[in-house]
Amino acid sequence: MTPLERAWRGGRSDWRLHVLSIFSVAVAFVCMAAALLVVVNVESLRDAWARSGRASVYLKPGASHEAAAEIEQALRATPKVKTVRFVSSEASRTEVLADRSDAVLSALPSEAFPASIEVSLEDDVSQVRVRQIADSLSALPAVESVETYQSWTERLGSLLGAGATASALLAAVVLAAVVSVVASTIRLTLQRRRIEVEVLKLVGATDQYVRRPFIIEGAVQGAVGSLLAVLLVGALFLIVQGRFAAELGTLIGVTPRFLPWQVAVAMVASGGLLGAIAAHASLRNLLSV
Amino acid sequence: MLRQGDRFDPDAARRPLLVFEDVHKAYRADSPVLRGLNLTIERGEFVFFTGPSGAGKSTLLRLLYAAESADSGRILFMGRDVARLRPESVPYLRRNIGIVFQDFKLIDNWTVWQNIALPLEVLGVAHRLVRQRIGEVLERVGLGGRGADVAGNLSGGEQQRVAVARAIVCEPALILADEPTGNLDPQLAVDILGLFEDINETGITVLFATHDRSLLDVRPHRVVVLDDGKAMDAPNGLGDSELVSLQVA
Image 1 (tube, helix red, strand yellow):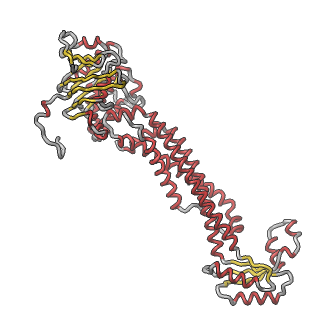
Image 2 (cartoon, helix red, strand yellow; image 1 turned 135 degrees about the vertical axis):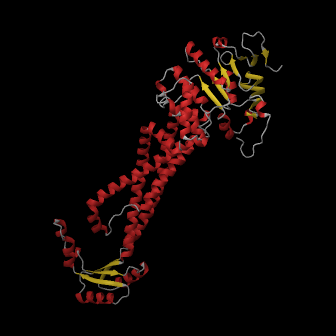
Image 3 (cartoon, one colour; image 1 turned 90 degrees about the vertical axis):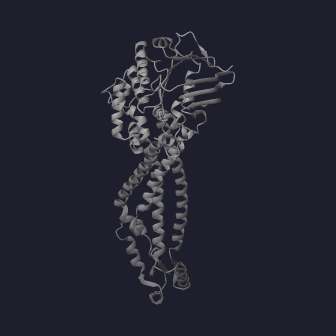
């Protein structure tokens, strides 16, 4: 009888215990998968914004059309500038209030919607070059301010760093939880199969022979638990995406995406590995007959 | 079959199966269980070990299958010193020994077949041979056709027969029976004793530990009496007046 067959036989007799263990492992991995999902999406948002190369040049309230046209012309002649579009104060108000019947927004004065020149830059433009263009524009008398969204990219970058740290901490917690849950389950399983183990040792089974099915059971608990977690988070992601994808796309400019398949596979593999290690560790010193 | 590296020794078959040389064992310093035991058991013998509870019968058997180690002395099984075996060699020793316990040590929710197959699975015997071998031993212990029964549903006598079948299924050189009739009524105890005698008839050495004096009177076998750390040998049973001291002076 192969170790797999023996593990299956043992797993069948203690299936309730295994289901509980798999559930606990899945809960731990759901936390981890959710954290990773946030990190992945913040990262893609940061990348998208960093690559977008956009700038909004807000004009002073009294800025003349001529001044605006001159700035527009100068920008068109600037290398790395892709498109330039003038948005008047009225057009800006219309854009903001489109599809909204918000009384408060409608009551805002025209100063709340300054005229602007929307600039889009080439994808390969560096942040330094964007900064240079912004500084040159800010020095012009007709310009109130220039928004390059670089600060947002930086904020997202630091948020991403914090997210990565939180995920690493969470990974440590998940690791401890999985090891603890699987090790406890295997110890309990071993207690329930004490006679089987004792008889195996008495008829000449080596420690390795006795351990193998328990290690397989531990690995299966870890792998199945993490797989369930990935599937559960995937299902939740699909539900959220189905309902809010359009809104999120409009709001932040990127479509949310699920964990890359490599990350999902790595999670399942690490679940299995952790389970096997936990089972192996829990069996040390417990096989003496 | 000789494995690579083994040397053929023509005298090996003529050596005693088991030799205890000045074996000492104590769990507490002030009350030793065995005090310099010397004993030789030949191949094919049937030996009763008897004595009051705590006399060291089980300890003696546990020393043999290396569940415990002697404080000093040598225990030679087929010429190898059991007391000096490395832990990784112990499983290979046990594959030559069948062990039967008072509490049967069966896996209750498994079938008779699965319980008996366990030692063969450990040895990696092919499924076809396992089936054939289990069929044979079930017939031998009087449980022919009962392989599919769940072990926990059998009577005490039947469970002990399953335990005996499991002990002999690999055709070991030695059977250790530690109070195998302790949980059985007198008639069943005699039946089980008969089963061990049948097994002994096939050439397997049997060491039968019991404190039940009535069993010793049923048939004349060699009896080793353990008491207070000392051992006395009655080569022809307790009916024989000549008790030989096995103790080192």
